[in-house]
Image (cartoon, rainbow, N blue to C red; front, side, top):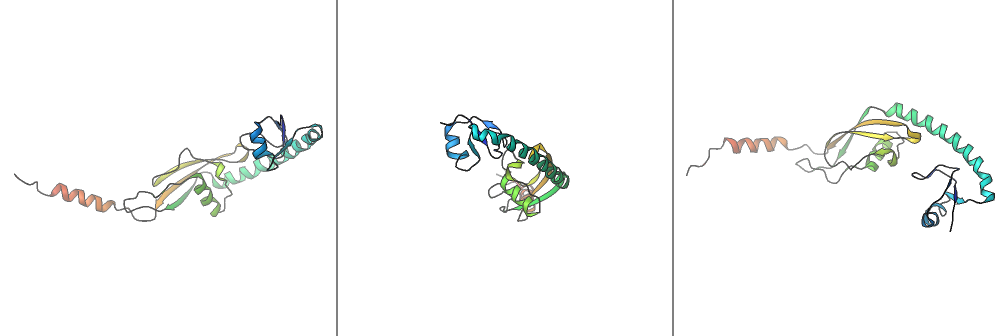
Length: 172
């Protein structure tokens, strides 16, 4: 159907604004064209290409500067996130990239969930090193301490174990 498309905006994982791409017909028909992220590349639209490339180059400079500024503010900082836990300290659910992004946005840092590089969701309380890949390849690291909303009942566990150990063994 559509051999080549001219991108009108950046599409993550595909290409940047102003580039001509070949995609599968379903991706073009169901995503790129309806959301006005691309147009069919023909003689008329190819004239737009140079204008879009120049626009993209200006945008890349702005994105790089804003990402460097954000990385300077956030890099090596420590954050904490309180999650719901049971009395033994086991988390209900997990902490995802979206949760980390929301927490950072609440604290005034504009970090999209796609910028948070998390292999797997966090499923236990503790301290984690989280990598961020901001726009234009700018990297940053944060430390995230995941804390439970209830005090962990470790002292009860220890007491029970000690009581069991000190109790005299029944003689037969």
